[in-house]
Every structure is written in C-alpha cells, then in structure tokens.
Image 1 (cartoon, rainbow, N blue to C red):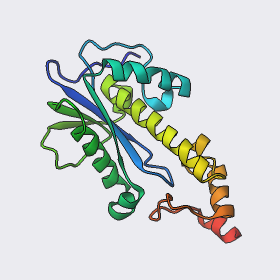
Image 2 (cartoon, rainbow, N blue to C red; image 1 turned 45 degrees about the vertical axis):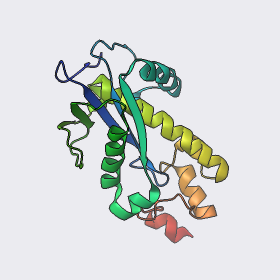
Image 3 (spheres, rainbow, N blue to C red; image 1 turned 180 degrees about the horizontal axis):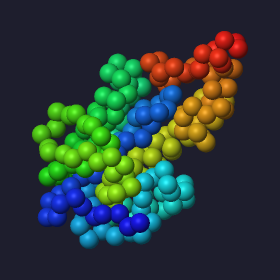
Image 4 (tube, rainbow, N blue to C red; image 1 turned 90 degrees about the vertical axis):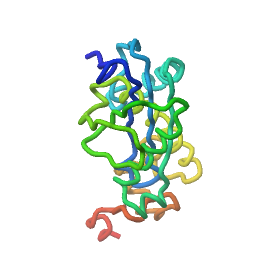
Length: 200
C-alpha cells in the first residue's frame, strides 16, 4: 500500500517516530523527517515491515530528498529517571528541535505525546504504516539504533545485540544470566523474568 504524503496539504509536516522502547538496554532513539509533498516511493513503509537491506537502501534517498531530517536520543540514565514513555517523548522533541527547518505541524506515531515544543501535532496510531514522513522517521531511527547497538555489542559481547539490538530475546536473557548486566542496561526494567532469576 502506498503511504500518504501528508495529512494536510500546503504545510511543513514533520513525521516523528521512535525505536527501542521495548529494549532492555541502550538509549531510546527518535527521528523527525520533513518530506516534500511530491515525495513518492513504493517501498517505504513501517521500518519493522522492511528487511535490513531495504531499510539501509532507503536511508540515502530519505536523507537526500527530505527537506529536513534529524535523529536524537534519550539516554539510559534519562530512561531510568523519567521512565521510558517520557524518555521517548524527550527523544522525539530533541529530534524536532534538531531539524534545520522548523515544521508547521508534527505527525506523531502512537496515541499520545507530550512536549514543551510549541508546535501543534496529531497522534496517529500505526502512523508509520500510513504516512510516508513517519515511516521515513521510523527507518532513520531504526537503522541508527541498530548500528549503535552493533557497536555496543563489540564492547559488551555475549548478549547478541548485533542481532537483537537489545530486545529481550532468549540469547540476550541468557547473556544477562551468565554475564550479569552492563552499564547500558536499563535499571528500571525487569531484566529477567522471575522464573529465570529463580533458576540461578
């Protein structure tokens, strides 16, 4: 299905999305993208529905054709201090603030958002599968974060982050059981289910 180019014509809309909310470690990463109204690409979609190869092939096109784009993070420390939902909002706000061109309106993936930004917005459930700018933001954020976690995997081997990006897979949980947690694990998250912890 071809995604919609905008919610309302003749205004600069920035699509915003985040990745990494469900991970046990690493920052939450968000991106904001303003696409031209005539942007068209048959492949672009929610980043989770695209292969790694497709996502990486779209990066150059998104960055080259976008009016503006930016990627930003909220750290593990911030996640633990203000909770993952608020950290996601913070990362999205930082991405918007980092745009070279100020948008007129924000299209936020999800059902809620809060920010100190004085820019009107619409929250769109499953927006990354409906609007090209949100899909583009999801792709930029995911590729950035996946690459970041692959680098962390070299520093902290044994958790499989180069494959699971920090999500709670069997390999990741096994790594925590055998090696313990790392400085980039989220202390406010339950790193192991009760049963696994008891098995220790």
